[in-house]
Length: 272
Ligand SMILES: NC(=O)C1=CN([C@@H]2O[C@H](COP(=O)(O)OP(=O)(O)OC[C@H]3O[C@@H](n4cnc5c(N)ncnc54)[C@H](O)[C@@H]3O)[C@@H](O)[C@H]2O)C=CC1
Ligand SMILES: O=C(O)[C@@H]1CCC=N1
Image 1 (tube, rainbow, N blue to C red):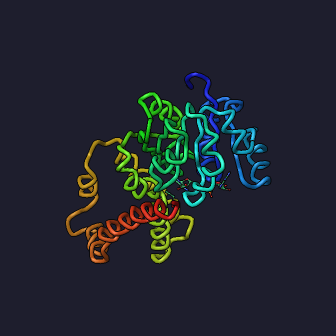
Image 2: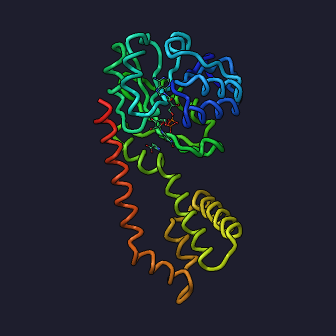
Image 3: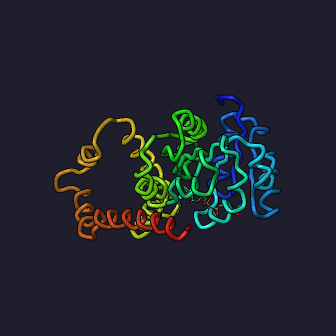
């Protein structure tokens, strides 16, 4: 487990911040090495009741924790850094979980030399199946990357990527769970259209999604091969695939991910 007995503060413990807190606790991280901050007192009370974690104000977190994991919305990051930026000692590690914001958005608002690591995780962290991409930002060394990895490994898989790829990562794996949920929702409705009871349609497609995902991960086969194995000559699958192609599903995905990437860039521009 954890190196050096660091204390980690999750600054802005909303949905993603809570996933990080709960994942670390599940992995055995001591609760007295965790701090959280929240804007609303009711949220602070909820986090303490749920996890036993100490919720403090932002400046106390800055003073007590060695690692500051910033999980506020990109739109709230500048105001947060106006408050804490000048007070962060330069030996702390700042980890940004914010979509879109480059590490230099942080470093420009922090004392010279403060290391910043940028990460993009996703909500399957809730079941220890996150995909977290980690990038060295300004002043971050291999040691800082290793520490960030140690924090996110218990939540699922991790990968190191150059920071220049983080907006694409955000569009693909950060937002990715939403695309799969939308597909499952739409396919459940399709099952209803074909006369299946809703619960049956839901159970069929969820297990099909799980089975397909495990095969993608474990079979070592290319997705095209896996799809071809389902697609019998003159059979049912090819009839469905013709409709998916006619309706531009592939093109829709290309356009959707470009839109998500562009939105990440816009969030960064607007946050300034
Ligand atoms: N929801 C998702 O699937 C993912 C979100 N992210 C990123 O995580 C960050 C948080 O997203 P969510 O958790 O979805 O949003 P959220 O709105 O649930 O959480 C943000 C929290 O920060 C708090 N906050 C804002 N300003 C604060 C301040 N000055 N001091 C203390 N607390 C403050 C808010 O009250 C809120 O509870 C965003 O930057 C987002 O881009 C990254 C990956 C996936
Ligand atoms: O929708 C968003 O902006 C965040 C970032 C990635 C997933 N959710």
